[in-house]
Image: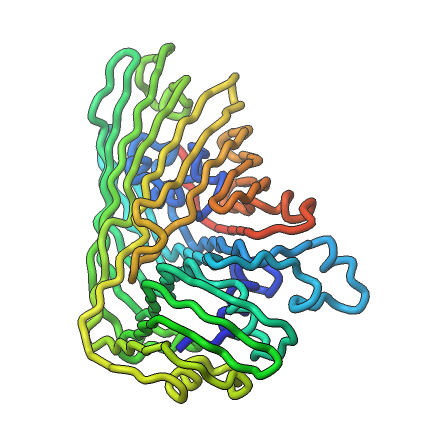
Length: 442
């Protein structure tokens, strides 16, 4: 079972307070010069781009947080004696807290034009998701503190789900211009992915509740909990030695309204022709199946001595609750999402975009990863060699985020939340990304 210290470390990594080799690329994917990165949001972006070819060397994006824990970057920076996460962080416990993290690494990838109306790309990625949904914050805090607490609490978790899932993917992207008239332009694209799953850990409970009594250190629980791992998976040391295969796909379309279209030429292809652009895509359709997965179901109708807990949740469950074990083929669903874009040219090189990432999988769906629902408004200044943007987002669980980023030739750096993290007294989400590429312009 995942150790609570491991979950805590992963969540803190997601907040950016532990050094980490840097949804994904927030603010950047609306840029008409984002190239390979924009294909992760909509595969139709591969065609009619501003590049003859675009070669990604390395890009990475991290997005994560929790509605349980709120941190102040200012307090961390100004703390003379060190910031204690256990005592100094603000906590918001409920019966349905959530933890989430998404790591997206783009490896060697490229895209190029096949003809004036079609383009192709090859994208390699390594991805990891953590989702813990509807967990009792009081219980999590008690377990994290090894029940060394002096107060009583009750909890009632319903539809608890969670998993850690890591996989690699290689995708072939094809895009084609479908309509090109005087004022209307439409293009479509599809990505077909071959998936290599590194494994997963997953938990599920339709409901369990209980009470903790501090004076006697007794934990009384009622309900059941299923816990499983794929064969050979170790969440403390995720590797790609024992792989399972799967298939996935993205599909997308982009419409442009071009009221002042000029005759197509090499020069005109270097310029944005639209006044209004609308894009829609469904990403991460598919799943990975893992043979010989082990699932253990625990009967939690018991009263136990919580002082025996020593940070190893699996051992504590084995020692105190009856269980049954079975071997199954477990399917892990990809984080299928609907991605929408509206981009408007205000004047010359100044644009404003509205993007939304909406999960098509409910967050309490067992054995599935989900993206965090996000709506982002982002003004930007865009030129051939340089773009700067400042995304403002509303994120699931009521979080406001404000960030900034830039693209300077082959380099891009940004965060959708860096400014709000610095200004807020209690930030719950954060993200950061960086990338290096070889752009070959039209």
